[in-house]
Length: 278
Image (cartoon, rainbow, N blue to C red; front, side, top):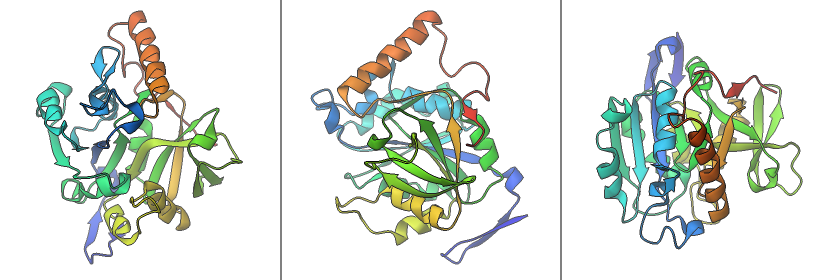
């Protein structure tokens, strides 16, 4: 039996082996880096080859065995997600809930809107513009028996453009945002795993200089406590929302895959995509 102690004075005793996992997709923001494509729509509704972008992170969660998902969105196109995705049953979901982020406040602030949905469960967060070719199932299943938080790393050629982990053994002790001289080639990609205590941590952090609640500060809180673990993603990863060029690159990759196999996406071995630790 594992006991989690919450600062909100709620104690919860549960068997970690029986914990279910929920999913959260963050699909807010103004998408200014993709203007003018996003001037009249949310970037997560833009196409990735033959499907809307939002389908891909949703498929990633479903392939990892998650059937309860909340979508966080905002802006003038929020209602289009409901028209597109409905109640989620056609994707194999038991529950697809929605919440609205009134203004840009950072990833952590968007995550805070999901507290009631999460309740006492563990959950996976995925950024809606992160396209993964490969499964996170093994990472999700291992986190069911872990405490603290977990992030997914990917080896990249340009780590200075991302948050780079400082690693000691099987833990991350700090995440450095866009370092000029990174100590390794790993980037923290937009997939995070937490327990419900994360909402107390979000309430304890201060906005950054740009006025947003940063997810890096949340992850650094866990890192400082020695409670931030990681796994390395061996599949392909694309950040489709970072620029028009990257959006094109992601589209080309997905198009090539689907031309080879029209039924391909998120198929194959359920465990493919996650390697052992460094």
